Length: 276
Image (tube, rainbow, N blue to C red):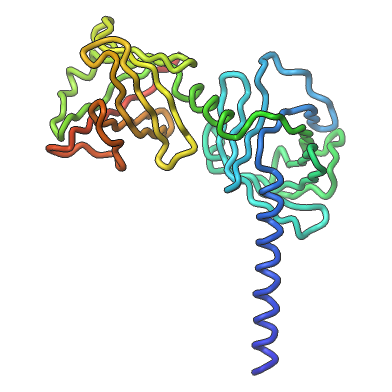
C-alpha cells in the first residue's frame, strides 16, 4: 500500500514537472514571429507576395497566423519533456478547422523551428524536410511587435469586409427580417465603418477593437449620424462568417453578454459576411 502511494506521488510529481516545463516554453514562445524559411518535401518555398507573414503566440497557447489579408487561428500544446520536443497544433478557423497535426520543435533564443506532417498523423522524428517525406519545415525569427498590437492588426483584418445585416434588436425589440435585407455594414482595415440602408450611409463610426479581452471588445466613435461625436462601448465575436456585436448606448457601461433585454439600452446585431 505504501509503495503504491509512493508511486502515485511520483507520477503526480512528473505530471507537475511536465506542466511546468510546458508553461516555461510557452512563456518563451509568447510573442510575434516572422516566417524566414518554409520547406515542403525538401523544397524551399518562394517568398510570399504580401508584406505581412507572421505568427502570433499568446501565453495561453492560442495563436494567430497573419498572411496578407488572411487570418488563421488555432492553439498549440507543448510537450518539451521529449527529445526532440513535441507539440500539437489544432486549427480553429478556415477550411481545415478542427484538425490537429503532431509536430516537433526547437526553440533557441529568438529562433524557432517546427516540423509538421502535410498528410497523416505520424509525428516527424527530426527537424528536416526531405524530398518525398511529406513534411513541412518552418523557421521563424522573433519580431519586436507586441502580441497585443499584432492581435489588434489581425482583428482589423478579420472585421474588414462587407457584412449583410441579419438581425437587430434594441431593448429587446427586434427589427423585421425584411428591413434587415436593406442594411449592410462596411468596415475597412483602418476600422472605419459605415452602415448603409439601400445603399445610403445612415451612420458611420471608427471602430477600436481589443481582441485580447474576453469577450472581445470594441469602442465605436461615431463620425456620422445622430450620435456623431459620441462613443459607444461594445463586445463582439466572429464565428465562421457571422459577426455578432452587442453595444451600449453612448456614454453607458459596456455590455457583459450578447443580449438585448427590455430596459437594457443594449443593441444586439448579427451580420453575415458577403463573399468577395
